[in-house]
Length: 410
Image (cartoon, rainbow, N blue to C red; front, side):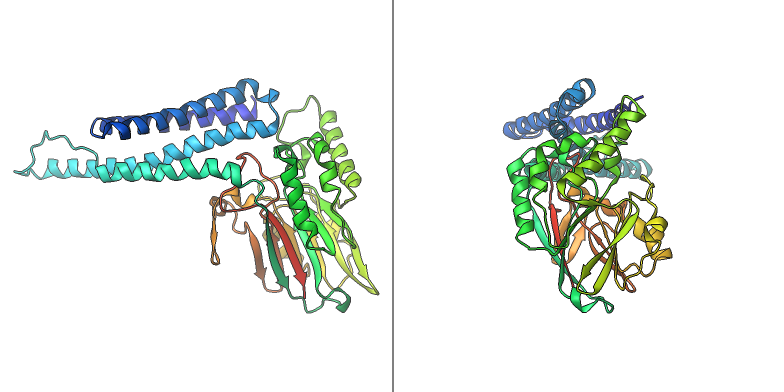
């Protein structure tokens, strides 16, 4: 059975239970509200449900006929409805538990002021709070689909290495990750992000995987955009988990292998040096630093990367590793390669939603990944996790914006 079909069946079951629970909960209060509020509530409830059901049906029956960026919008509508109903359900559940407690207490204590047959109504406060809570995803998710996908932000870090050769002092590294070209639908906006990157005048550029969602053909319309990436010391890239084509069905293994080969050729045509479990050196004057690039290796994901092979023979005072999945850092790098100074990763996208303000950051992805965005340090080793240049699934971003990372070595 199709993986996508299994996914949608699970969504239908969970979504159906949410729809039933929230509908029954709200219906018990509709008649006590003013006409305008009742109409607004009913209209919103059924509008979100209808968009989600229609989107699921289209993805199941005709998903292959739509471009990926259109399918992403269908998925976005499903997400909006899910989180709207989830917010409502959580507050309704609190009220149901409250009512159950009152009912149990009255059964045990025969109160003279309350007959055993008295109907326990829902708390107006909790129901209205549920409506307010549901309004947050109802407003923010569509808004994130329009203002978030191309709201590129430059993030800057300075990292100090005691053994950094003097020739490389103030070396400016720019990192981007997770382009996911098949999700783009505004080429001009993508190009504005590249303008922002090039304005930084980087010495070297690193791309840390997931050039496409599935297929090399996704890059066809964006070759001229990303071929503009140039730097004096070069542009270097690696593969991410999506680049292997594991998330779609191919007619044969040969077709899948041909797609991967074509994607490798795309990197070359862009002018990028694709590192496949190997290393090379950046050289200035008589000094050098090592760049190590591995294929994807992640906890719970594709583990084809061979760091032992890539590391073999490395001889440089500073070593930089490009590895798509940040779990690689804790699982292998920190344990067995303690002289790798800096690892650059991506993969998480920061879940494309969350909160970052005044040093505080949180995203749902933190429930899955301990290290999911920004700079991390353990002893003398550093990991930087880029939030991603593109997007996947939900066609937007809320609070976790697409990122261009500028790292200066000092």
